[in-house]
Length: 101
Image 1 (cartoon, rainbow, N blue to C red):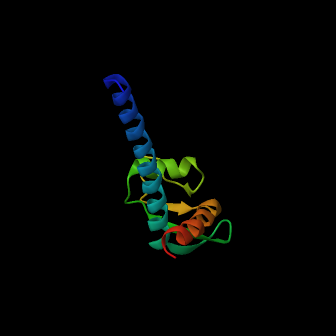
Image 2: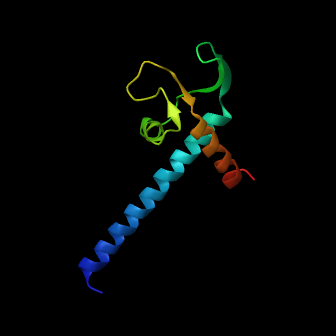
Image 3: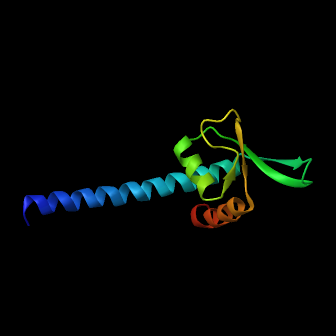
């Protein structure tokens, strides 16, 4: 195999590894948000909400917002906390089985 093909294969493998790592970072971030959350009663919708501090990578938080798992986080934002959506809670249940059982 010549040098150019080898170099190209290495770059593709690095991109795949980076995508896998990004996905894992997002999964662990969502899981940690849930594990450190507290439950509040929302006065407007009269429903329990799961709120957590947003002390994690903004890129991961923004990606979780884009996927519909979090609300109220887009960086930059003055809010210091996020709310997990119903979809986010459902995803956390999957992640608990994947990583914690």
